[in-house]
Image (cartoon, rainbow, N blue to C red; front, side, top):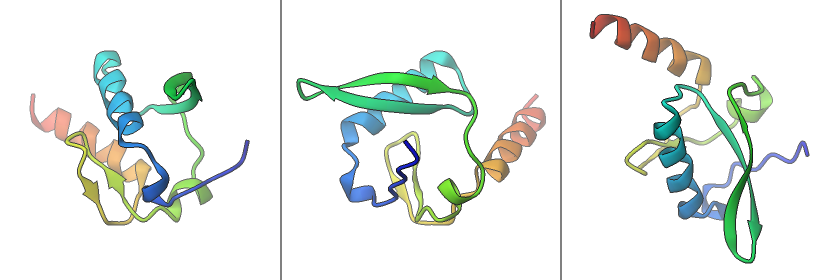
Length: 92
């Protein structure tokens, strides 16, 4: 849709929790979800391994981690991916 919203207060924590649960089941490092509501129930309608660089994430105020804690910091998905790869190599 091209509609981008960064205000964390509009996001339902149930959706955030579902996204992390599905990500863990899929064992994905990087994943994006599109949700819709049907009868007040959140449903995933699209999953993508890729995401747009630039304007979508560069202006984010932070992110939720897998413990559902908000991290109030700059968002740089490319860095996060590289950091995860380096960490996985160092842990072998």
